[in-house]
Image (cartoon, rainbow, N blue to C red; front, side, top):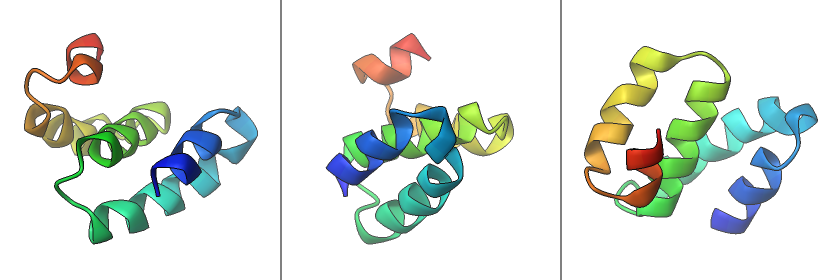
Length: 68
């Protein structure tokens, strides 16, 4: 799941795929920090800021969350 999310987020042409991939990944692994971060990043890139905020808060202190 993590590798797929990383691949999907690596290219702007794959953003729709990233949205679908990370949505499924977070259903299966809601406590996995890297997956939560990928989902939050995907939501930010697709301008779904209100949906991304709770995920960033869930990652309180995680380096990716601090950067966001």
